[in-house]
Image 1 (cartoon, rainbow, N blue to C red):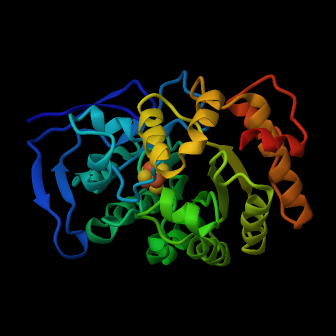
Image 2 (cartoon, rainbow, N blue to C red):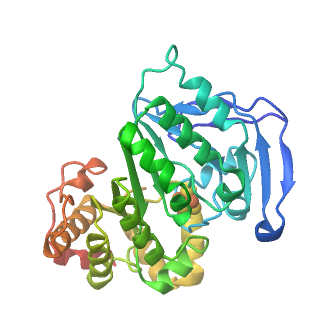
Length: 335
Ligand code: SF4
């Protein structure tokens, strides 16, 4: 069996070299399946047309046991003949040769030293990283090569690699970001069932910064009607400012095709009263610019109120140009 995968940003094919080996999860991984593959290439280029703020990515896994209902990466499993729902959460593709490939691909004769982003299409510190340690190995290779990189995660497992990341940060530019969309217990349990509690993530932000690894927070995704209440957002912002987050950036939910169906199916069971509101708000993948800008303006004000830094009201324009920021009270339109 050979799989040809589409790259996360949509264009670039990636061929796995060998037949897939299936490993049934045991113990703490009971109910999961790990599909071992050898990737021909692990550092992937984002298509030039992409608006992503990075050009190169590494994703050592495909699928993610964090199982977020809104996960943007779900459709990538359909490229493999699996489904974007339960399969994405439980059947994880593991690029078992990722560390050796990164070492080879970083060779000075082949690589120019560009920044590499991890966590763009799967969580590099999802649960099975505790077993495979691929992200740990990749961070070690990037550190040894002095290559700048960033890691986006929802997992406190990143703290296992605190010393390694601190060492890398002394050698090159390293940036961590935690995704913390809400501190609301009910919303967290319902929407991110496989993730560490958001308060543990806030603590991890503080520990990373204390260790010399600059760490910011994406308040993302903010879910209309579920986690966009001003009080809910203030709780996240306040906690993250107090944890010393280097930046606090809100992102409103977007629902690309494939994700949209999964999320709305889930919402119909969890909060059927919100479904009509979502279909109005999301005729396209992105919510209207006025809604994104209202969120950005509100979070900007909250960050300023709590003495933090780096939230900018124009951030929503990266995905929705040309709209004037709306006043914070228009946030009510979202929910
Ligand atoms: S942690 Fe990220 S990659 Fe994993 S399921 Fe959640 S949104 Fe998707």
